[in-house]
Length: 324
Length: 299
Image 1: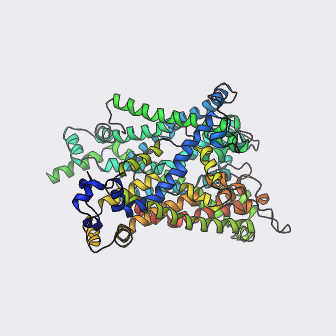
Image 2: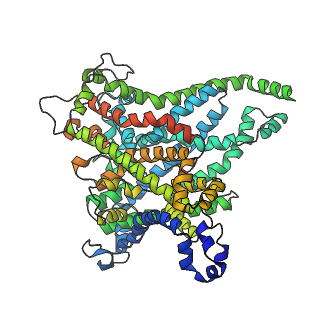
């Protein structure tokens, strides 16, 4: 059995073939002790910070009391889930989360595809590289910085964007748009577009670079102009990439992005700003409803898993390659 | 053949519709690039402008009167200087810890013959699909006694599973002959890793150091969750406090006689928090455009 454990470290040479066959597990550990030793810190990390919290979700089914711990707290079944689904917040949370997700799908998801196609049509290479270098930058800035820029640009008294909106609407009151419920969603979507569109093009540009030039040539021979080539050659070539990105995005439908939403939430816009992500923090950390907020988080996590497997299945049903 | 192709190309791109498209395309993309950088340039210019200028001129890229009042003010406050130092130290230490843990774990995982490797890999991949979530993770950090400790900003994020898998794939591509030679010379696996493999991995170590560093520098959620002592605030928390609330309040320990440049210091603190990223950006860009990270770094 142990004989097919090949390329062995040299220490293995000292072990006779006979003993190797019999020694089993202990022998394997001795032989690869250095590799296992190197694996150990990482395994401890994943056990502590990934798998222990996974075990920790059991408190969603308890009335968790810190001094009684995970094993001592009383079990209450689905009480917290019933409380969530029947409670006054659920409808608003679901609506806000899904509305933001819908806006994301309509505006933010296609933006990098469009920009990548435009960049692909740009024939001045210096210009193309310059534009790329600049539009990637916001990806590396924190949400705190993006939120700060928003505050500065939309500030009621001196913000340049606030001024433009006022002029455009013929609004004479010095209204603070950041505090208005109806401006929350447009601003959040604008931030996402600004921060992620450029970076999002990378993966599509990589796919576009891989298109066989002969396909374009063949299309040209058949009399296809630039726009026909775009439609019949370029788009089909990046379709698998679009599908993969769509599956990944669908797993994140209920993920509104904690940091961004939290930073943009004020006491005045909570009716439209509250989403599952920030609600977990609010109810768990601020209000101390440990078990209840864990139940909210678990609901979101399980829904995410179902969504990603579901859309993968759907993509395959529709004849695409899918993710796994 | 070649000349015909060339001719076809030129005719195709010289139609009126095509020309018009090119012009619009250039305009749109240049516009996008401007929309991206103008806010940053405005904040930079505003950080060197006086209060009066910020409130009277809606947008400018060069201050009429060049003043450094905003910077002198924030650097005179303990709160800001402490937050800046904290963030620099946590980022530096955290990056070393993260890179060390990631690379050390990736090496054995790259050895296809290692028994148990597949199990560990699958368990890692599973964490990409499902996590315990915010509150159970918070409880673990609390039970480990890490609340209000700088380690809470480092350890819970010590290994990024995406990065780990990319480094593992990189190690698998390395030529095995050198490693074999070192083993025959009597090196154990740890020696092979430190003497042979790591020196061969310098570019990829640089890449992931930068990505990890940007991650810690930008992290807002961890300090929000785990740090409640204002003396331990990081820069991101301070930026948030300064910009979205009353600026002077966040720096309350200040000398009361010095009237703070209320708006200007917001601009200045945003510039300071952005500068290191922009400084390292060219190095970052060199690596991510090579395609090593494509698709996997997307959050």
